[in-house]
Image (tube, rainbow, N blue to C red; front, side, top):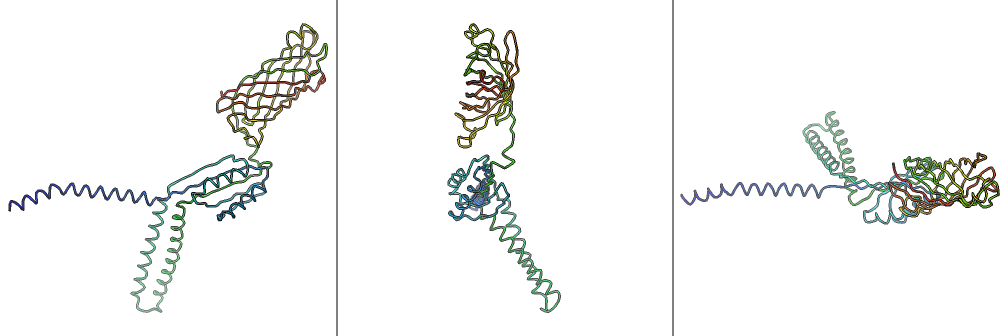
Length: 357
């Protein structure tokens, strides 16, 4: 009797721990099962601009066919073509390299999300329909006459549920099929005609520019050989567009030789710079090549007279360094006044610094 009481006491003492361990194990297995059953969907969307629209489009079509991918959907307009296709996860890097050869990738967006909720909903829907079909078949079996209207009504309902089950299985298979698959969307745009190419991104970057101007054919009583000065330069778009104002003074040695020539130039300009599509399009941190122009007016003056000169200056330059906050660049421009251009035109060499305000 005492032995039985002792065994019972030990069992009552150990049982809560066994129950707790079993509960933990069940929860652990359930969580792991949830994790294993999770279905993740990965989508990559590319937007590509190209000056050779038809060539790039055909190139992608050939690559898709060569690799055996299936195009799920295509959207085509006069100036853009969109491809939707699926690839194995292992081919992601290779496809990324292929797309990079089509043109300039203006945006690349990666989206990944858990599709487990949709999978569970699809499973529940399928179970519900299968149970519904069983109920109809049971009711149909209980009807005595095969020829009765009621039997026929239940037969029709069973067929409808069969169709719904078929659609539910298709949906379930589609959800499960995305595991290990990347969904790719590539939008190829004609760079020369697409309205998106003209998008303007405004910035606020004040700064300063030092300029050294060498007149090609200085004339006694009109112009000096060397002018130099500092401009205030304000960038207002990433493109990049800017306003400039400043003053140039003639070198002191030149003024001593010719006191009648213009000793000062006050300049007011609007300018734009454009990046090359073959040298990074301005996206590099170092050494971005660009060409540009600026146009405006220069007020030439000395102690005796003042003259207003419309000017235009084509230029080529290099951004030495830039990030989100600062920009250093140098350029060479050809200073060309519309009036008195023969004896006031020349080469201008500049270095500038701008910062985000």
